[in-house]
Image (tube, rainbow over all chains, first blue to last red; front, side):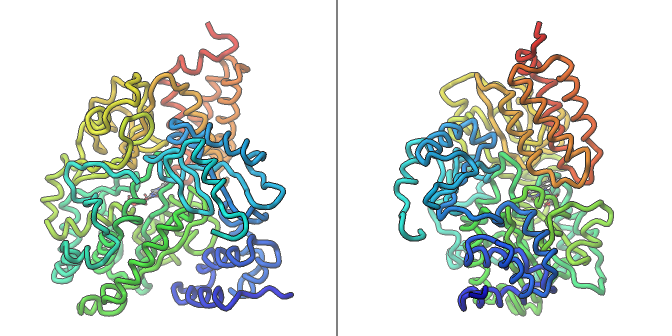
Length: 162
Length: 420
Ligand SMILES: Cc1cc2nc3c(=O)[nH]c(=O)nc-3n(C[C@H](O)[C@H](O)[C@H](O)COP(=O)(O)O)c2cc1C
């Protein structure tokens, strides 16, 4: 099956273009849309984006590889990102991370065998006043304790996206 | 989010009101400053901003009115406003407040700035992790469009401005202004040599103003109340109130609004309730992770750009990180060092290689594998990065290393193989 945006994503894609004086500037938002639909940016997806924006595939690859939030590898349905920078460290993020590693039986950077959870250590999420902090699919969970973090994971729906 | 009581109460507003609701904002006098600006001419707005002594809230503290003055009045090319909402410096969490809770003052600031400088397009560059904030700001922009407050002929003034949110994608370096502009253009976020400065040649090679969120939030207040009013709220050459984000070992971490010049010790002990569990204070990083660390004896000072310089540090973003005993400072410095090594864009050799070296040496020290010589090597690496890179990320990586080693030598020497 050929790669194609769904009508809904296509509409969002079309609405991006008039915002910028050229198509290259729409690349990062378009890669987000592609990621939303296809899960991650595998080479065919990047080629499709290149073609839709009239860009060389090398340009798309160059941009995509620079940014950590543009995924070049598959991630779990739930992407859990725990901040381990200074303010979170001072407020006990190492215990939160350890509890999650134990709960999911994976290390940072790994995905559970069922493909549900990816656990990552991330840099400062800019919520230092409510540390420790983690994100689940880019939704912030703040003022965590190890128990609460585990409870949040327990509470995630294992059959559909939140 | 935790928002505490504020001394001046103009930047952080009553948390019981939903400020993302346009009606609530307008009932409280919202967009009156924009109307007033439309009755002024461009030079008057720039002069009022100069008079306010407003200095950039993104970290460098550059006078905003002066920066605006660099933008050419006549330009064949379009001009742009790029709002820096990348908020990436560890310990900094202030801009999220406006993006999430109160975006209309930011939009007003954008309109006034754009009107004064002849700009018709604004991009708000918001870090990608702020997914909810991106949606909130986009919704507020849409509300403004519908109410005739953005788009064509704003409030019947004849002035047009469009405003778009552009998402970042997880790279701290994109907070550096030239990297941010490259990222906005769809490229990897690598800083460029200045000059040319963005004001002359920035986004899409056109004249571009880059300002931090909080800087722009101050603009409607300045227009509404006058530059002098704003200047009088702060100290000499440091105009206005400022939002401080206090994190780490205090009893009440959170965001606080103070006039510039507030005493740093009072911020920690009075306003934030003192040190968590009444432990002993060990160190304070006063303005985000790049700012040189202060000892407990050094914090009885006014918090403004110039006073922090006197003690060899910086106000930065006013993200105050408070560290109590018995935290091992080598662990704190390691996290900072790892951050800058991870976020180095790799263009400049001293930064790309040096930040990695600093992490490896610190790890060796902590493992008890290092000798005195390696402390010297660490200092040497920091010194050689500083001042030798295209952008200030290199300096930001070097300053904490140098200041921690100078001010807390025992925290490192105790791990050495040849410790006395
Ligand atoms: C490595 C690096 C990261 C930066 N990150 C940010 C940031 O996240 N937000 C910000 O407003 N400014 C950041 N800055 C400062 C910007 O380059 C620029 O000075 C600022 O956005 C200008 O706005 P202002 O004058 O209103 O402060 C950063 C600078 C450097 C060198």
